[in-house]
Length: 225
Image (tube, rainbow, N blue to C red; front, top):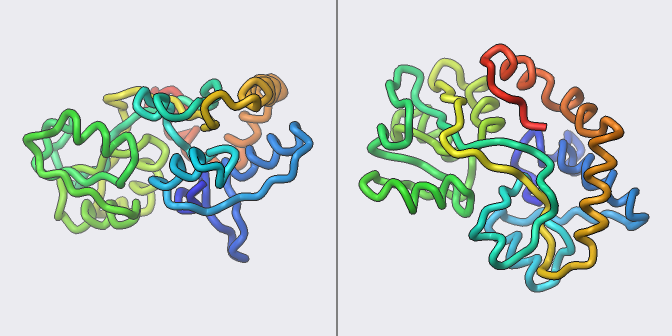
């Protein structure tokens, strides 16, 4: 995973991995009776690392897209989300097509969406999520295309300069990435099903995403888990 995506993948005050995905990875390791080693890699380097055998699984808020499924396998989805927009506080932008300048994080589905659908726009591709947010907050870009949970969090931290357009224009699901033909896929799917039945995802939501759950409910938007 890339430890740069709070509250899903991040570091605590001591520099140790923490967040939703870290808790999920440790529960998976316990279920499989295997030790868990978390490698912090750039997001666009995760699939190459999986394909070359450097890592065994990707658990990094990764969308199970058709493009990625051509080169790796995915578990059953564990979280529903969608692409939406972070825009300037006074912006009238409601859809990606309304924006003249769009910023995206390299290697994400927002990047793929912009490359495929927004050829008339100026698309800025940046390596860091925080840099994308700064482009919006400073008025240098009209819209940042990213997932709902992150857009919500960035808006909460930058209410004076940004606005969240949380209704998704493209629905997506996150899943665990595995090498093609991996025998672990069936075991991972079994874990996810049992974890959900046992209330594991509800506990993760209450622990890490209580504020988002409440806000999404108020807005009438389906919550992720």
